[in-house]
Image 1: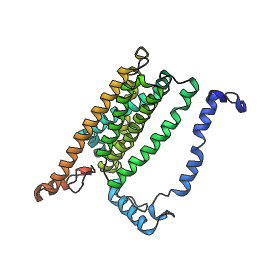
Image 2 (image 1 turned 90 degrees about the horizontal axis):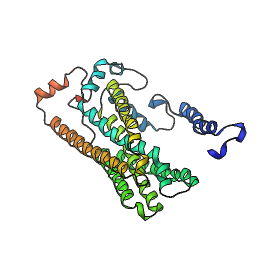
Image 3 (image 1 turned 30 degrees about the vertical axis):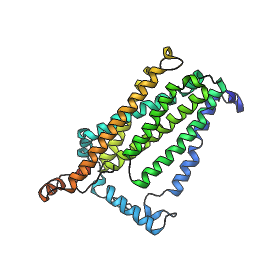
Image 4 (image 1 turned 45 degrees about the vertical axis):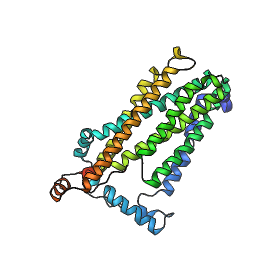
Length: 302
């Protein structure tokens, strides 16, 4: 980007906005033309796929073919549910640990590469293949999660991979810059793949239209606390190894793994409890006003 200053009479920061913003325009046009509001209007789906999506929408938020139902309205009761459901706070804590590590890596990645011995030009170019590899890993792991309808173990696996990456960074620092770059790439692949899985897990396990959108906003907003923590993790006085920063990130990953295991065990037990409910307790829980995901017929995705 520094080399583009003056090209076409534009400064390098103007080229930055153009290169990042221009692809959104054709993407927006493509989305408007090919992504319809209701399944029956989609031309590239067959009749079975259209019916499947219609049923999913009807069961999920009570709207299909553009016909809104009662549970599609804004419900302040469901907003209250978000702040009284302790599981959403667990999702938020996992998100903080995950997002903090992501922000640390994306912010300090060029600095970490430079301290490993790479040149100025290499420092700006080497993150590109790392991000591409992380994107491919993210697509593969999320595809696997979708095929198996499982999230908890996939999140734990991704976090464990990123933990291995940090361990390699700490132990292989004196073994050359290539070893450091490969270790950081492993860390990137793990941590960048886990956050989309977490949001998908949250979305699948929160019932009620209003509660779901509020919970997603709450968790994503809570995760941004990592942006406040990030500047205090990697300090200039810790150069060139940044052992303290790597250890803090490793600790955050371990905490997120523990919370993920705890949450998955709880959801599994809750599913078993709902299967074994007596008729009296079933009717009591089913007749709650706006039960959302508390309805006894709901089974949580693990």
